[in-house]
Image (spheres, rainbow, N blue to C red):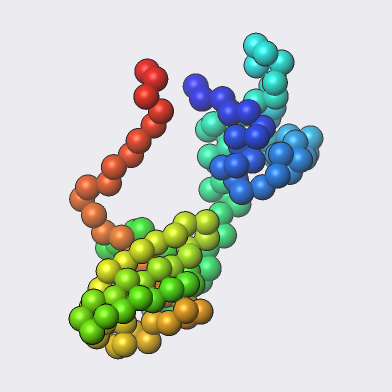
Length: 133
């Protein structure tokens, strides 16, 4: 079972330590004390709260797709040469970078400030954790 200190929980949720303490006081999270006397929350409880609180912008694409990893965000930068372009999106706290043809950038009307959806479809997704077992 994974336990996270209040400061770690706050970092993962993108809120202040005080907000996590408020969630504990309100009963949204259960806080316990670890051996050192620090307040901790169970990782599984934090994950469930993160799912309940997740707010994704409305996906502007009205399509059906097998891709489940759809990240709606704002285009923050476009760097182009005559053939290829690098497009950066800010999707919530995540920076997504895509390389595509400059023709595709023009066809899609991608420019800083426009709304776009990054669609990730991959058979190889690498998941990492800390090295201790």
